[in-house]
Amino acid sequence: PQSLMNQLLHETKVSVVSTEESESVQKLQKQTERIQAVIDDLSTRIGNVNDASERMQKNINHLSDSMMQAINKHRNQMLLAVQQTTEKKNQKLETRKEQLKDSMQQLHKVLTNHQKMLKSVDMDKKKTQT
Image (cartoon, rainbow, N blue to C red; front, side, top):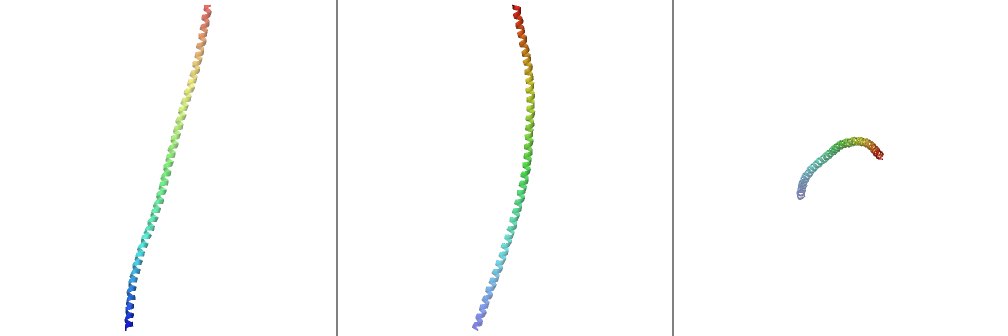
């Protein structure tokens, strides 16, 4: 009887331990499932962040490329305007320079003629005086 009692007692302990172990295992499994769900959620979030980052980088690159194209177009227009203005100014200055050269030549002719006339008058005076 005592060994039967021991056996029953031992089975009861084993049964209690098995129930506690079973509950512990179930708790651990549930906690593991929750942790795995959090890990899965974090992995999804990481993927979403990476996707969003990639989209933003593409958008930034596209906008930067568009801005650079606009800036380069504007720069080229400004350079062309400066070049055209320079050419127009130089053309006007060259025209004025040529006009002044012509005027100077005409003045030189007039001066030369006046000098000839003055010499002629001087010679006439000398002739009349003698």
